[in-house]
Length: 205
Image (tube, rainbow, N blue to C red; front, side):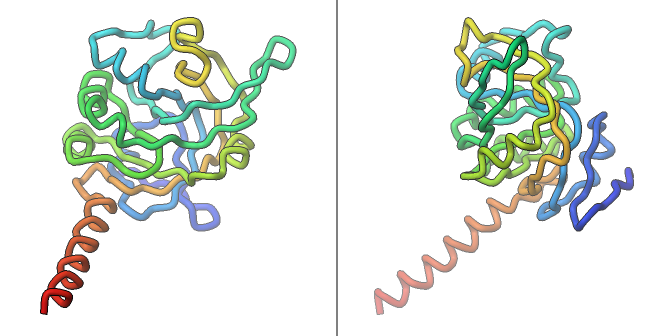
């Protein structure tokens, strides 16, 4: 099993994102990512799910990390600069995510709010993790982007929905679904249901 370095309490996950590294992560781990992230929202997920494949030379999804994000981009000279890059709600991609993890060999998905049972099972089976990024911190997260290395589908999908290639350094996330079938979201849901049952039971007496 890969031994990942820690710095300031956070696990340092650096490219290449191998299955060994990913399977060494556990629910609750604080992680800082250094390497390449590929953004993808609703339009891209549906497009991939429908059987389309981006050119590997421009967008190689194998052993990569996809970020549920519609970054706010500005053009400065010939270069793109991300001014905001917060996570979008992930559950919208639940109908597509498991199939994309399997087909393209994703190693991690970043978003907010968690994902469902199909994604949890795919993470366990294919060696992938779900990483929760803090919502409401779009500008802070954009500061961790060191370079925008390219974009695919800008004319087809529009800026927020395109696949942006972001080079990040120490991008902060928390593991909430690991590659061993553990899900913080599932635990919270079970605990909440139990508490709700207790409250309803008391009301009925």
